[in-house]
Image 1 (cartoon, rainbow, N blue to C red):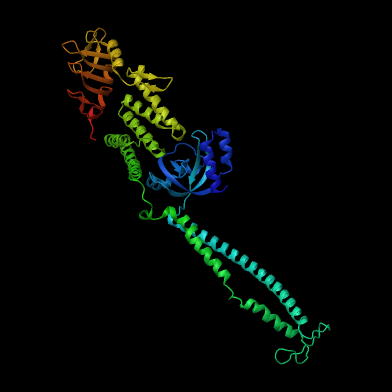
Image 2 (cartoon, rainbow, N blue to C red):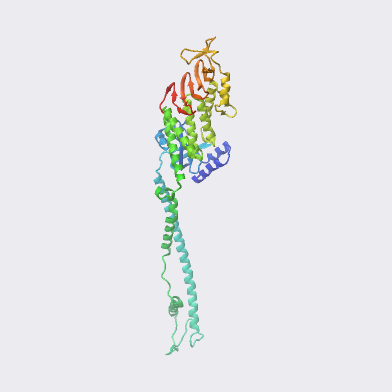
Length: 506
């Protein structure tokens, strides 16, 4: 299967809803084939378990898109870690790959990176050299064919001219003065002074040939033109066509940026922003891996805001990928901060962003969402979950009022000396559930969820006028995640980030 056929196979996979067995059968024909493909490298992660080829076990998998917007998954061996890191976010990078098979779970072809990647310039030079050689060979073949045709035409023309000339000579001889009906091999004529015939002598074949030559080259008073260098002209013409047509077709897409047609500022701005977004997302992921959660969160939220402001959010394939990665990373950040509500919100946004969920690691995403659902139930927020639709209702006034109504108040529970742990007055057992506290005026002051006497989950406080004072999240008695504090105008002016009860730097 040649490269063109393989790309057609990828296109068919995208446009047609094939069964897994059908797709596997189609890719079986391409298995083992090697191609040089230009890919856009979106995101990578470590592989787990056995792969289609054991050489790629414990390596890396890279989500990629071809120039035709077709999805592929490229596996890299563990020894190519540095190369994998350098490829992230790159576009139109050409690498050599081998077709390993088809992953029916993610509905993607699986390719394996091959060692010995050639530089882009070398690949282009080779393509041009092949094209030149083919063009020259074709030109030579055409030149030979033209020469043979001309030679054949000249031979036919000479034969026809010779026949016509002989006919004219014989007619002339027969129509001359004192013509006698004699042997055609021996004809006598007289040439007299003043143009009459004077004496007799035989006209042999050599005289006839001389007259023939004179008639042939003196026809209508014109001598023949100089013979033309037809073969040379054909080769020169074909070379000019190659320079003007074939060569630009190969070199056109790779011309220097300064020589390319200028596109609109809007397009330049969009492409530049998407490139910065990709690099920023990669930096945020690296910060997350280094446990720098504040820096990772700031990078992600900044570009999500800019993407929404500029109208780029999810409007094409690459923007969709970066939006998905951003929300997924935010979900993981909040999960590590033990803020299950915000973690679940962002993970569900990541799931909603993906127009084709098969492009992404659905198992990882679904497992993370299920994990947050369980934690939310432990924190008394299970009634916000729609199990059937796998959705989460946002915290609103109606929900808060329903929780305040069922929450235990100070008359039923006692507060320990540290101000955080609470227990039942009668049994002295640690309290689990919602608890509410009031201002002296009787207005609601605090709503807190407890687990075994410790603050665990959502916290909210109100000012005496009923406006929100602050919002926080607790995990096993310690403040974590964002803690916005609101001014008199209802806006949050101070939003510190906590982890394990301590503020962390951004």
